[in-house]
Length: 236
Image (cartoon, rainbow, N blue to C red; front, top):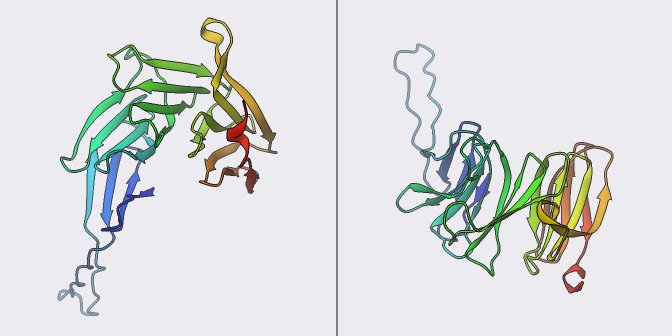
C-alpha cells in the first residue's frame, strides 16, 4: 500500500496476491447511496468508491516504488521474479528486470531506486539475494546478484542520503547494514561488506530508513525498533 507523492490528489495504490494493482482516488466524492425499493425495510445500499485495477503481474505484488525521477512511473516487484515499470498516464506496464532464464524462480520481495540515479534498480529476493540492475543494459546484462542471507530477505531499504548504504531484514532474525562501495569476495561469492547488524528474537520482516538516517524495523516478536545510524554515511 502506498501514496503517490503528488500533492494534487490523494492517490492510493495497493498490490494484491494475484498480481493486480489497485488505484483509489481519495479526493473523489462518494456516490450517493441507492435506496432499495424492493426491500420492505427500506435498507440503503452502501456507497462504493471508484477503483481502477490494472493486471501487471502474474503473481503477488510484494513491493512498489514511485520513481523519484518520473512522477508517471511506478516500479513494482513480484513473486513472478520480475520488476515492471508502469506508465501511470498510459496504463501500460513494461518489463524492467527479469532473470536471464524464464525457468528461474526468484520471487522478489522489494524494489527501490535512488534519488541520485535514474538508471539503477535495487531489489531483494525470497531466496536471500540482493540485486542491482542497470535499466539501460541489454537483456541478460547489467545485473549484479549478491547472496546476503541463507534465508529469505523480507525487505530492504536504501539510506536516502547515502544510497550506497542499505539495510536488509531477513528470516534469520537479523537486521543488517551493508556498504555497496566495498564489494569483496571471489567470483559468485562477491558481496557488499556488512558494516553492522542486530539480532531479534524472531524474524525481522521489514526495515525502513528515514531521511535522518534512522531505521525502523518490524519483527515477528511483536516489536517495532528504531535504530540511529545517522553517521553511517561517513564511513570509509
